[in-house]
Length: 262
Length: 372
Image (cartoon, helix red, strand yellow):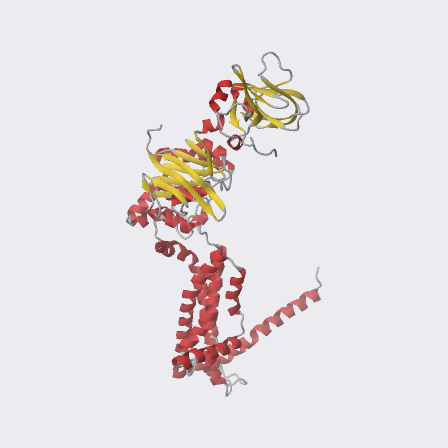
C-alpha cells in the first residue's frame, strides 16, 4: 500500500508535468482569442485576429508557398521513398538501414548549411539558377524520403510476399499484381509516411530559411513577424498551424496503428 | 494405366542455388487426371520442383513440358497451372469471394460471371456462407479451403499443392486428406502435391515420387513403395521398418543374407528379381506388422528368429507397438494387433521372427563405403 501523501505528491507531479508540457500552448491558443490583443489584459472572447489573419495577403501567400513546398516534398518523398523501402526489405542490411535512417537525425542546422552550400555550388554558380521554393522542396524531400522509406519498410516486414506469387500464378502481370495486390497492402504505410512528411514540411523553419532564396514560407513569415514582438495575428496563425499539425499527426498515427494490427 | 496421356513431362531437370543442387537431373511424367505426390524430407528439392512447374524458378538444365509444350521462358501468369500455397497467400485486403474471383477477373471474365463462378467454387469446398468475409476472419481450415477454391476456379490443367495440409491441426488434416481426394475426383484436374508427410502422400496420391537430395529415388503407387521399397531410404521414410543386413548368397534353391553373427533366409525368387548380385551387401526390410513375437518358438515359428528383451510397449488403440532390444544393442519394432496376445511385459525375454516372403530386399547403400 502506498501512503496517501505519496499518492498526492505523485498526482501533483503528474499535473505539474502536464502543465509544463501544455501551458505554453494553452496560453497561445487563449491569447489568439483575446479581443484586446494584449498579453496582459483579457478583453473578452473574439475571433477578430483570425479574421485579420484571413485578410492578410502576405500571410496567405506564405501559406500557399508552404502548401506547395509540402505537397512537392511529400510527392517526391513517396515516389522515391517507397521503392527505397522495397530495396531495404529485399537486401536486409543493417548498414543500409542505418544509411537511410541517418538523415532523420542529422541536425536541421547542419542540413540547412549543407544544402545552402551544395545548392549554391551546383545551381547558382554552375547553372545560374536562383534558389526558390523548388530548392526547399528538394531539401525537405531529403529527410522525407527517409521517413517514407522507414515507415513503408516496417509495413513490408509484415507483408506476405507469397501473395505476389499467388497473383502472378492466377494470371495477373507484374504491373497488375503491383496495383491490385502489393499497393493496397502497403498503402496505409505509404499514406502514413506521406502525412508525416507533410506535417514536418509545413512547420519546418531552419532548412527553409536557408534554402528558400527570396521566397517566404509560413514559418519564415512568422519569424519575420515576431522579430518586432508577438502580434495577436501571429498567435492566431500559430494556433491554426497547430490545429492542422494535430489533425495530420492523428491521421498518421491511426494508419500506423492499423498497420500494426494487420 | 500407361496409355493415359501425360500432362507434364519433366526431362532431366536440374536446379542449383549457389553451391547447392536442389533438383538433380529429375525425369518424371505426370499423367492426366492423377493425384501425384512428391514426397521427401525438407531440402529434398520437392518444393523447388513445384515452383519450377509454376514458373517461379527456371531450371538450369533440362526441360519442362506441359501438354507437349516447352515451358521455358513462359511467365507464371501465362501457364495453365495454378498453385495452392503453403501459407495460403490469400489477399488480406479482399473478401473471400473477391479472392476466389481474382484469377477469373485477371482473365478478363466480367465481374458478375466471375463472382458467380467463384460462388460455385466456394460451394465445391463447402464455404458458401463465408463469401463476404475477409481472410483474417477465417479459421486455418477455412483459409485452406478458400485457397483451394481460388486455385481451382480457373480449372487449371494442373493444380500444384505445396504442403497443403501442414498448417492444419491433426484432426482437420486427416479430414482434409479425404476431402482433397473427393474434390480431385469431382473436378478431374491433375493434382501434384508436395509433402514431407508420408501418411498424407500414401492416403491421397495415386502415384508417388520419393525424392532424396534432389533425386527421384523411387516412383510408384503407395502400395509398391510400402511393400517393395527400392532403397533403405525409402523403407525408412515410408513407415517404420526393421532392417536385417548381410551379404547375399545363393545355396541351391535358397537365398540368404549372411552376416558375421546371423544368417537370414530370404525369398530366392525375390532376391533374383532384385538384381542384387551375389556377394553384395543387401538389406531385408520387414515392416513391424509382419513381425511375429512369441515366448517359445514352436514348430510353426517363422524361419528367421532372433531373441531379445521387451523394452517398451506402446498402446496405440488399434494395435500395440513393441520395441524389442537385441543383444547387439540394436532394437526391433513389432506391431501387434490389439486382439493378439497382450500379456507381454517389459523386461520379458521373447523371440521375434519373420518369414522370407514378408521381407523386401534392397541393396545396402553402405555397400563398398567405409564402415561408419
